[in-house]
Length: 526
Ligand code: FAD
Ligand code: SIN
Image (tube, rainbow, N blue to C red):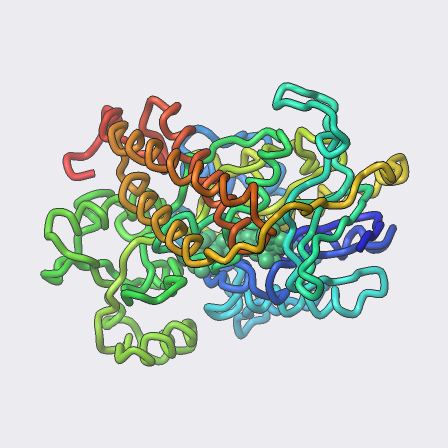
């Protein structure tokens, strides 16, 4: 099938849906989403979205907290822009139907998370993302200019490469003409030609064995962009969330929100001792990279598989009111958070790097934008501040929308684009190989490219990735494509980019911590 559309949006998280609603006022829109539309990282977001709402908070404080967490690698101009545009975008989310929790006096109830010097997290209980997606999807499904294609899988961006022209990462005139998309009904690959394309494909947590991310987070957008020769950066900065529920075998790992520590919960080691003050005076509310490394260190010192989060001293009624989903989840596996310690362990959570974008969300490829977790805007530097991700996504979706609307009228469809050719391909009957290789890859990343790294470990990962890259490319070249094979290929590409950029960074900074480049002020244990 061949389709034409003004705006093609790949991904239906907060970034894709917000952008679609903006541009749909000016042209027709197709959203492709590889699963059911609400299966996104956005849906799993618990803590909330950061924004300056009332004094004594100020933009300056939010800016400084973001810069501090980012360990000197944020782009300050971008941080200032995103923080100061936050209230407008929050207003828009509310207009589109999102309900944030209110206090009795009618003002917004603002939570606190690690690295924030003020209470500034707007939330909806402990299910903020679910509420945002509910509201945005409702609007999208009722918009006459938006077609939502659920279960459709974007395979590759279309550029001059598909017209037989030679392009390299140095080319400055690459154009995006749309995308090849796997149609779940026909099992064929459709050609969608677009004037403007937005990548809003989210993160890549599934390169690791243990992650808080849903299975859709396989780095597809980053891999597609890199194959199309777009610029990609900062991939070494992988954020491990300090506290996912220790429940071996569960995938994705269930998150225990940082907001619980903001509410007063305390981390304890296996002997019941509170340990965070040993590592940082900010204790439980230190930035995420520090809390994660502290937990990692404590687990290594004690030879334990997890630590504990203690809520037993907190008001039990308030606890259940604020964190109903966490209460119910823990209870379902026999843990009553009012009386029992919660076993927690770090898990891969967020990728700070991705497709390089400018202030308008433009990538280095013409007519191609990116927003949300798949992009790298300069906002997060070497470590993202909690609850700044939903914020960055919604600000950039808007900025990309404004710019796309200005430019799409000057773009024409490229009718020379050929349809996908799968002649000579064989039906792949070795599905089990794909599953096994995916597991192998995730084990490599968990073992060698985790919270604390070294050049030796990174080199090991690099060599092992080389082998599975070759085997998977061989399979890809001769197979009729399916989603699992494409996802594996993308996971390998993203892993390769993470390891390569980690090897290139000859220092420990933020989330990239290497025992070969210990910072001068490194604490004995971390
Ligand atoms: P997503 O919401 O992940 O959406 C990606 C979309 O792209 C999905 O629809 C997916 O199906 C689609 N897609 C991907 N590849 C393809 C393809 N090849 N073809 C078609 N469709 C494709 N951040 C905060 O700021 N505050 C929080 O409280 C918070 N809590 C979090 C809790 C959890 C458990 C997790 C996992 C993340 C949390 N984050 C939080 C991070 C934040 O949720 C994400 O960074 C953000 O939601 C990403 O939004 P997005 O629109 O970029 O991508
Ligand atoms: C959380 O609720 O702890 C996650 C917040 C985030 O990832 O920003």
